[in-house]
Structure formats: structure tokens, C-alpha cells
Length: 220
Image (tube, rainbow, N blue to C red; front, side):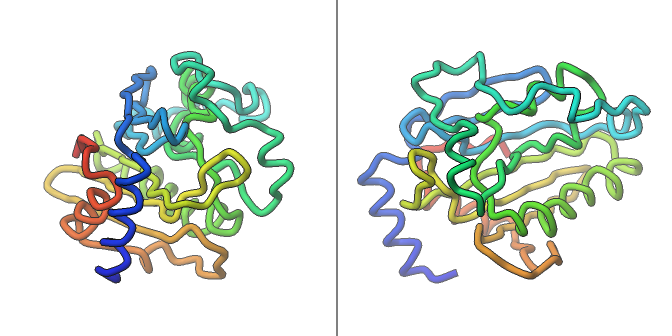
């Protein structure tokens, strides 16, 4: 990573107060670190269990309420809605904690569909290598490793989709047994489908996160 670029970002973002006004919001199966100035999620995390991954009950997403506001966060801090995305067709509503990890239970499924658990994500990025990374955790790791701690976050710059901030990067950290695996991927149009292209060392990722959000208390 370009150290000069991140130093510049640190100064700009600190001046704007980004990442300095976070609240923790605990839902039934995941927790949000939500920025009330950005009006966007910084981090969403949960524990992926073998039991949940192996559950035969899979709630069909079509039968669950569409994306909607989060009842645990004041509406004045929520700006994302369907119209914002309809007017900007290149972005998906990118889950931080993915629906596929929560369709074992109706409450879990519905809570994963809060707009506060999403951010604008380029469609190919969301539907290919990021999706494959989520499936790697759900289908490859969780059958053999119980209690995988999964953290997914956004690093925001200055770009916006109307009122909704667009992340510069998405990152994911998983911790299980004595293992830590991390990925940092730019939120940009791409034809790459290999999530391993974005592997990063934990210490390097943590430094980058804290350059964006020096006051954020990291739970990992």
C-alpha cells in the first residue's frame, strides 16, 4: 500500500470527523459498529457456527422482507434506501454480514436485510470473488471448524452515491482456533474472481484500518 496515500487519507478523514462517531448495535446474531456522521456501517461481525451452517432450514430470501430500515438505529442516521440504488445501477446493496450466513432462522434472515448491514458494492465484485469468499467461510471452513469469528468492514473515502457513502475498500477478518485470515479488496469494477488475490497480513490490515479510523475500538 502507498504510505503517502494513507497518510493523506488519515489527515483528510480526521479533519472530516469520519469514523469518530460510532455506536455499537447488537442484533440477535450479529453486531454493528455504525457511524452516525457517515450514516453508514463501519463494521459488522458475527460467529459462524457449524450448527447454523449445517441447518437444513434455509429461509428463501424471496419470502423475507426486502431491505429495510434498522429499528435499533434512529432514522435520522439512516440514508440508504431503494431509490438511492435504483438511480445508480452499477452498485449492489452489498451485505457486510451476508444473508447466506443467516438463512437458518427467520429472525436472523430478516435482521440481515437491514440497510445498516449494507454498503454500495460494485456488482461484479459483490457477486463473484466476494461471494466466493463468503462461501469459503460458510461451506469450506464451518463444517470442520466451529465458532468462526467473522468481521467485515468498510473503509470510506470521499465518494458518495447521492447521500450514501461508497467504500473505497471492503475487508474481512476471520478468526478460528489459532488461525487468522484477512482480505482487503478495493471496491471497484473488476474481472478478477479469485478472492485469494486480496489476502493481507493481519498486522498490515489493522494499521490501515486505524489510519482510516484512529478512534475506532476494534473488537478483534
